[in-house]
Image 1 (cartoon, helix red, strand yellow):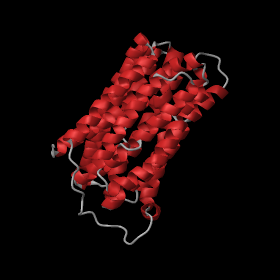
Image 2 (spheres, helix red, strand yellow):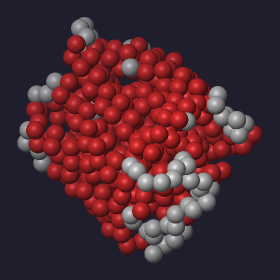
Image 3 (cartoon, rainbow, N blue to C red):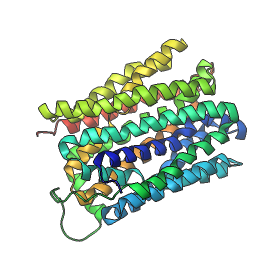
Length: 410
């Protein structure tokens, strides 16, 4: 077994990459799936959002409870195998019901990935290095998104969307074996000051701690509301480009792979480094970078959705992508700095509940519903307006991060 911090962080980052590959392969294949099964944008939005979010958040809490004292390495390894198998099953679906059931299964499996991984990272790295470590972990999401758009775009166009799902599920099966055979369960952080004592529901105790800590409450609201934009945009932007700008599935996949996967990944990683550097001088900047990034992205995203020139639109989107993943690492590093070790898995699950039930549950589904509702006079126009409307949620989310930032004194 390898006990190196770097190796464990690298493997967990690879896990998140596979997690996001299997989750987001749907985004670039939505148009092809919708055409084959004659689905409305509302049905496609349900596949992307509400159905996935419902089971993801329900299974997140039992996983968090298991992660408090159980073997987190084993939880992650089993979860990877489950969601990878069901990703392959999505490629074999013959109707909307089978697609929905397989998608539910992917959500169940993925619920066991992030919560125990966050707990392990916080045990491995001290507070002064935690944002950087979390940011490195989150880069895995960008790598996974890169792979999802490459595989979904190129393989999906060449061989059909089903083969894209078959291929996307294979890396996770191999990774689950690697996790079981090479990764060690780290010692738990016993230096964290306990914030609760006595018996009772861990869930209710953790909720109580978050409720009494106004900064944590604002950060939780911030990540949940911001998730509406994050997941809604990620689920529908590729389809919008295909419809409004006439790019092929392969062209769109390559573009998103390069922008979200490479440019977005660099932005996510550097945001963690920047937050730690600025935070060492003024702790408020550990959340301040989130506020600035969310607001800075808005003009570019709005320009992307209103510009008819394809080159200009793609250029504006590329800039907006730089800021897309900045909020994740500072959010969970801040959370884990405010919570005792035995509460971290449950606190992470509670935050992910809000992030997914609001962000994943509302974002893609609401955009699909708006797209079906808004009158359309040009290809992709109603979808573009739907994407434009949800940008308001980003500003609302930034407000809550700002309120949390103001409470930081040390």
